[in-house]
Structure formats: structure tokens, C-alpha cells
Length: 180
Image (cartoon, rainbow, N blue to C red; front, side):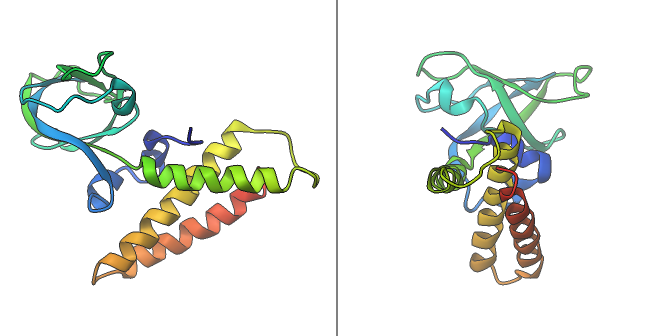
């Protein structure tokens, strides 16, 4: 269990799934048709549990282009025919062919969630505020973004912008720890 979702990360960094593609975990990719907020899959996909897909990020190419959280996927572990995405303002669009990939930052979110769990357990004897899901979610998202941008900054040549983001998220993360 993690304290935040990929959707929480997109609230802070809407282009995260494309900017940090090199360190995201890609679950699958292929082609499909985007109609309103539904992505009908054309290409064969590996068997993926719908539990893994829901909450992950669909990066859609083409005219629509963008990163969208997956709201629903059919139950079971058979190839997924349709994904329902969180997309606003696209209900009136005609069906559009699109390439897509499904990415997640679950491993990064898990590391930060485990750290937060450890911090909370080690300070149970100290005066701690009551459990606050929103504060944990915020701390997890900020810590995860700090981890992602710190990692990216070590992997690319032009890293000035990434280092600034990593520092900003580090400061915000540290401040958010006071509320958990």
C-alpha cells in the first residue's frame, strides 16, 4: 500500500509521465482509439491485472497528447479491451487513433510510503498529531517527486532545471513531514 497515487503526482507535475519516462515503470504500450474518455485498445497486450492499471498513467500521443490517470479497467487478468481515463473537455471529440503507453511510479511511491511508515512507527512515543490521510498523501507525493527529480538529475547532462525541482520538492517534503 502506498500513501499517494500516480494521480496525486500529476496534480503537481502534469507532464511527469513524459518528462520522467526513462525512470517510470512502463506496464504496457500499443495503439487504440480514443473516444471521449475511453481508450479502446487495438494492439495485443500482455495479461495485466486491472488492479495494476487503475491509478496508473496513460500517456496518449497524437492530436490529444497528454498524460491521463486510468479510472477503470475491466476486471481480471486478460488482455484489456478498454481503459477509462480521467479526461476533461474531450466528450465532444470524434474518435481519434492514438498510440499510448501505460506508466506508473509505483516503485518510487512505495519507497517513500515505506519511509513514512517507518518515521511514524519510530516516533509513536513522541507527541504525534492524529493520523491525517491528506497530510500523508501530500508528504508521499512531495517525497516521491523529490526522489524522481533527484534520480533524473543524476542521469542527464542538462540537469539544472531538474536539480531546482528536486530542491523545491525536498523543501516542500520536509515541511510536509511536520504535519504527519
